[in-house]
Length: 372
Image 1 (tube, rainbow, N blue to C red):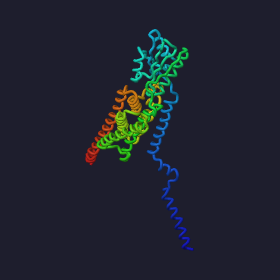
Image 2: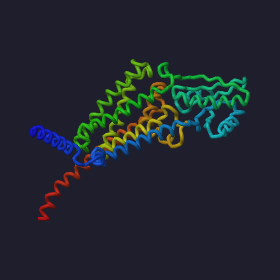
Image 3: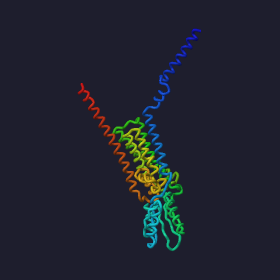
Image 4: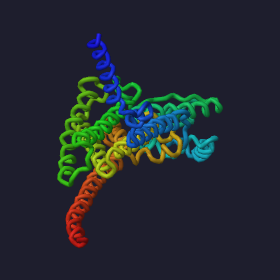
């Protein structure tokens, strides 16, 4: 009996000891404080802000698309041309911005050069006019222009026939493949940069490590470009043709995204990843013109779209595949500027950080000796 009591006492004491070691005497609130540190709480707050920003940005851009100054070219007899321009430009809400030209050939050239979204050719000998469009450049803009002009024509008891000079390929029926391809490239670029950062324990890199990371983004971007071009070309037949052009564009887009990711994480650590997501995904994607062109977006998104890599990349891909590379120079400069800026900031941040660390190591012993 004594042995049994001793065993029972030992068992109870052991259980108490285990419980005490398990909770450290902290209780529930102590466990919460231990599980959710101040750093963790700040990271969660950052994620919440990105989440809300994502919802605000996408729904703010897409919830009520409204045409504003959609560029239209007009071909009409000289006797009525100026009157028609004034009438179309004066429509409520300024949905159109009309440019008169001399003939149909010039209107067609402007359309395929991406200087206009549609071209209205007025036939004075009949009551049927022709609207030339190139829906491969973005079906949303051409649809909006057609609806507005058809409504105007009905009021004048006229008819408009729509002729699509450059439709999207069969595998790209909604014209969104360019946008999704660039989306995959930009996300891949900054996630690769983040992976390099996390592999080092999220430590801010030295200059040598920064150069290695930037150099690693080049082959990664090239392989990503080949992979994307294969998917939209031979695999899915979304964007056929221009294979090597797409490889080059993909390499530049991925490298630009990765370089910016390396730079921001070099400057701000984990917070830098959030800033990269803010630039490329929260702000860049809805304003890119992939779903709705700038003429259908609210002013803020219309203003920033082509200045950010997703918008510039989408423009380059579309115009390369469908329009023989017309109107791509400005977008290529934008991508190049982001790539160069990312490289410059990453190298400068690492160099300055290394200089401060060397100065601290040098002045530390001197200060200690002076105190003695």
